[in-house]
Image 1 (tube, rainbow, N blue to C red):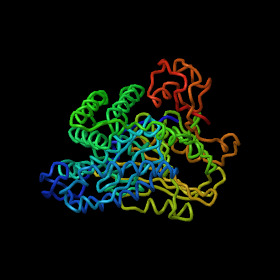
Image 2 (cartoon, rainbow, N blue to C red; image 1 turned 90 degrees about the vertical axis):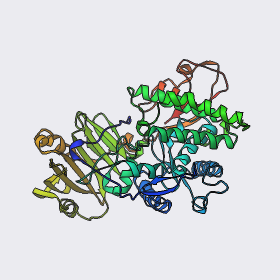
Image 3 (cartoon, rainbow, N blue to C red; image 1 turned 135 degrees about the horizontal axis):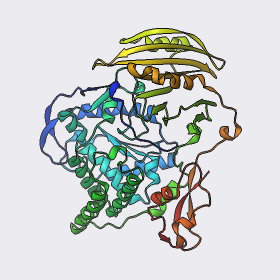
Image 4 (cartoon, helix red, strand yellow; image 1 turned 90 degrees about the horizontal axis):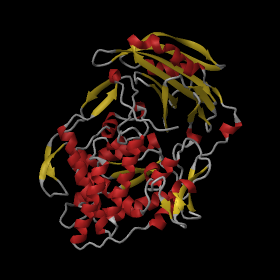
Length: 496
């Protein structure tokens, strides 16, 4: 299943502000005072609380050696950051940093205030050496050190939430959309944060600086941005998710080598690439979507681990992540969210708990039969703050001792247009019995030496798994599809 980046449903959204209080404080990078939305202590607490939710929502990639590798590199770069330099205040010196690898195929890295830095397994798969990773991690450390989130909180409205408790986080941090029910408003707003281009350029400078000070070949970072440009072109020109407000990847591809050269002129030797060690850490990493965690094929969503399936109506796209499966139509005005309810023990209690929230008016509710499973359903309306009426169906059913919820909604004027689609999803829920699906395994990248000198596309397997294309593999290997590869070159190739 390919990732699709989508915009929020405008009829379900209301914008709110982070509860920031303007104060003049020191910028650890410049040493000057400026206006911030939070104190440093508040930034640390905001990051700590949000980190718990990010981990619960998106999941940490379960590879201890890889996680330790990323964390150790991050801590190394941190020691040369502005937060650890002589003369900086103790509150900056003593702030601990946490580096995590998230279990997402999306190419992304981001940071939260107070010292929380994340990279996805999808991003790691698109890097070719430790020097490139150093520039990425240095960039994110730079956001924290320069206090960019607190700067933005002081100057702009940055959050968007859905009043009925469900929305899509597409184009936020690039993690396949999301289920706002499981995120606090503050965390959701942080994920919608858009740094200014000047913020991004400053973090680029800092990423190169911190890498160069550790003798990494910082100019290598440009190759990653070349990959981002290629991904952008494959997606029809849309810059991947979190980069939508960043400087153009082509611009960064040009400026990063210039920044690296300026540090060479200052006497900083940059010789470390560490390609072999980095590639060894990537060997056997999961690539693209993990079908064990659910996937869509030919109009059906399958979940091998939980042994269920349900139909996907024509014209609806699937966004699958750790805590929710979201189906959204192409016009982006009708949504179904599928989640596990861990709070209630019966379908009736599950539905009534949801529709009992303030602002929701029940039209009708009662027991129903869903393909032989105990189920309960309610139809209701909810008013948004701009006066728009949303109509929804909440269906809960019990299967294998779990309570599953289907929440489907659109604006009231269009409800009849989508009602049959909504009903078909929940009514089609059933046990998964197909052995070939139940036993499906994820695609993993394995390191393979080119057996001969030949164009890249001639070195690929005759058939590729899932929906992976030859161009996808050229991008993750940072080569051209027809580029000549020398015998013995180590390539990342998919195996399922």
